[in-house]
Length: 248
Image (tube, rainbow, N blue to C red; front, top):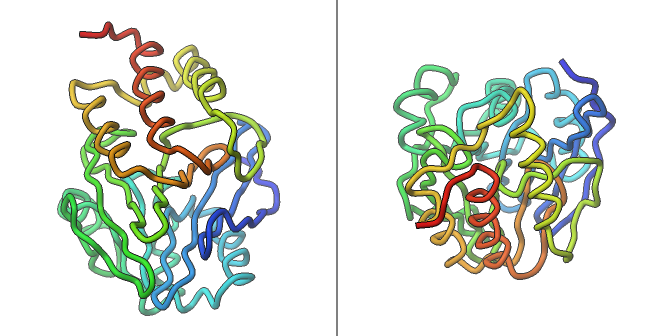
């Protein structure tokens, strides 16, 4: 397991807290997002080994035993490796994932039944409304999906818009250069093709852009405040260019 620096906590939108762990060996941030509400929601759990650090960071914001929902994009260690640790420690918490992941992964893996969501389904946590967006194979995995908080316009992006380095928690500057560089570097290394480009990639990214998100909560790298639709449209171009897929 990698060595993670002590977490930093930043409020990137009202009641949306970015908890960041930096792994120097990878030159990469792992960011997790807590939404403070009547029914608090955590998006992505991190690895089993990082549970104590993340739990302590959450405790600086809310009583972590009050967590009600624990969501993630797809079945992968950095997305949901500590899921059962959170379910054990927060007695009323339930997993939130795609219906596919509920059926093929979480019903067997988790110690508590999940809430499997279909495309467009909404979860209300009090003040906030989370629309589930099915994104199969994006960033990767048959079961992939994202949450969009409709009230404030925050899209929880998982691996989309991946950036390298120990970067600022939140930026209003263009992410195009950093994202292109990170994807190019990944393609040149042992983790090449970690994010597949499929015939549905452009249409999925366009559907996310059509939501007009004002904040992009990004798992690896700076979160973004501004014209989220433009960033997602640029990502289509970057993926097509980086993965060597010709435009139709």
